[in-house]
Image 1 (cartoon, one colour):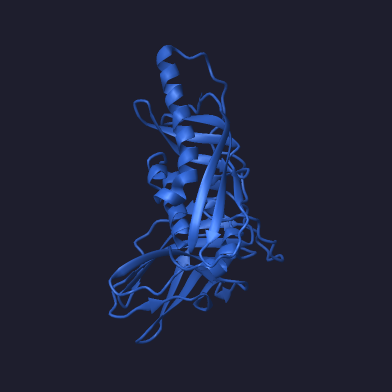
Image 2 (cartoon, rainbow, N blue to C red; image 1 turned 60 degrees about the horizontal axis):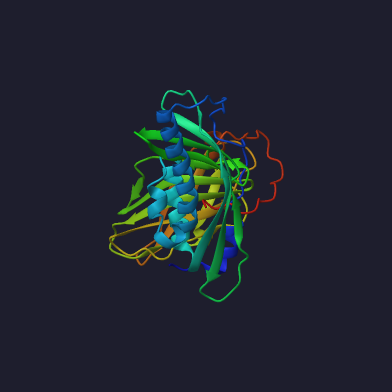
Length: 307
């Protein structure tokens, strides 16, 4: 586990969500199942149950079980949830509680998929290594869960409801080769949208000859070449030569629309190295409205992180 105890409470308070309240697929009425269909339905419900338990145990097993029960967008989310857990300096334990998992309903989409209605929760307990106290975090999973069929009697979770919001309404997965300067490659892979706060998942490859460091004071989000004011948090430790590190920078969200750029300055033993990386607006990817004006920022929601 890496450092982060001083910022742990802030990070765990930043992962609130906004957007539509369920997976995109509708919930059509089901029909009476044949014996073979009954086996398929049981396999889908079993996958949903295994997902809930894997979510709870992810901090202990490094996300191994969770990786085996997700696909698509949820697979990207699971990776960054594991990165989040790895940046916490201390121990995290999870406990699942399942009240019910309803019968699967077909989505009638282009690919085989079903939706089940879940009544469940996971409680995460945090023990920072510095001995400080953090309140347990209860994640409600009540609501629709979308599962794709990836093989005979084999289902994976693609979308789910957490704290009343669908995964696709707060988690945006980004792809790209990354930006390279002076032996350093920076790739932006994910943005978690949380009201007035965004959490950006990065991987940084240091192929230079010296250690590099990105501190909170050297990170910013620019809107139309103007910095968005507010508090910034970075989970990155110094990155040694020949290594790749993954982590987050937490940034104030812009109030209006415009051209967005992530600005990073890496300190090194030689000279600072600056990056200006244009990024798409994650509010569009998550189906949220993008205001054209610039009203006062709304307060951050509670519990924003990937998990």
